[in-house]
Image 1 (spheres, rainbow, N blue to C red):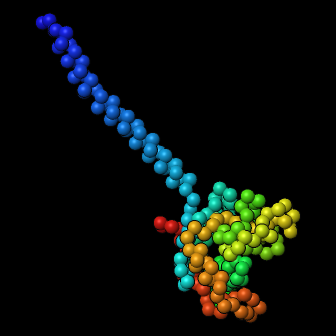
Image 2 (spheres, helix red, strand yellow; image 1 turned 90 degrees about the horizontal axis):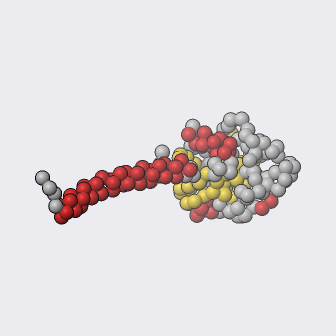
Image 3 (tube, rainbow, N blue to C red; image 1 turned 45 degrees about the horizontal axis):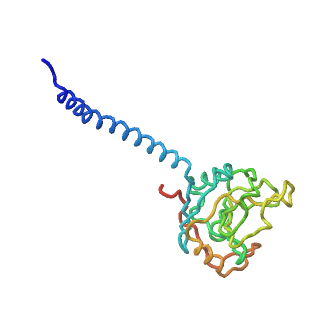
Length: 213
């Protein structure tokens, strides 16, 4: 049977109508797969956030694993072990910082794990709202105690490799609840045994956990 030109044209048009949705679906599936992969990569690269529920309010801290991987891993280990739950902010100095992570109410110490490497660096300064590791005069002596800077504390920044210039490792920042940190910074303090700058009324970390966990 001879097929006319109009019939051939119609067949091509019909083929086009049938094929186009198939091609469209393939493109959509490819696009969806690419978007899913992008979301997964974004989630992998997203900064970990830790929630600190205190008796004075909630604080959220974003951690900088890209700048201080050893410190963040150490901190999260304490978080996951629920080490901080029930501890107090034991040292508070208005206009400077609030510190916690090493004492229970009554100022009895809670032993942490072995000290870690000091990852202080010049591009992670101790600005207001940053969270940093507390330590002794020894450079690599930080363990579980940390502090939140109430102001820009430039003298704590990394300047050089010497004992006086190495500085304190800032490994994250408060992204929500800085008003709570400021309130803690204003509490009345005094002496407790041989410790100074101790809040008269305990400021307790009730729960510390990864956001969304």
